[in-house]
Length: 101
Image 1 (cartoon, rainbow, N blue to C red):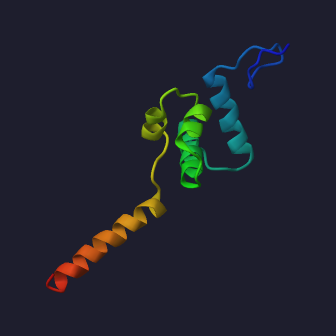
Image 2: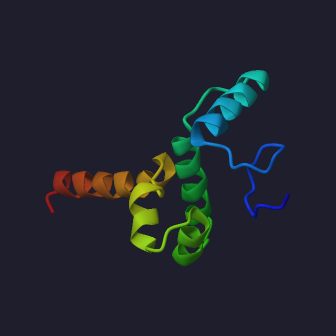
């Protein structure tokens, strides 16, 4: 039976979020991976895609959001490398103050 959904059981019934989480955690354990919340994994994926040039409207579509701001607000998070530029800028301010500027 083709239900149009990706994650279904043998009868074509949609899996619940609890069933998906349980299966994902089991797979992480079997693969000896660190257990992460699926929400965090989702945010990491969207952040990676955003940082590698995928346009916002495509990220929102893939996330199932009608509003791009929702995707950006809840799923695209800066990582350490994203923040490095800001840290460098702060360092430049500090150096300029020591030089009497």
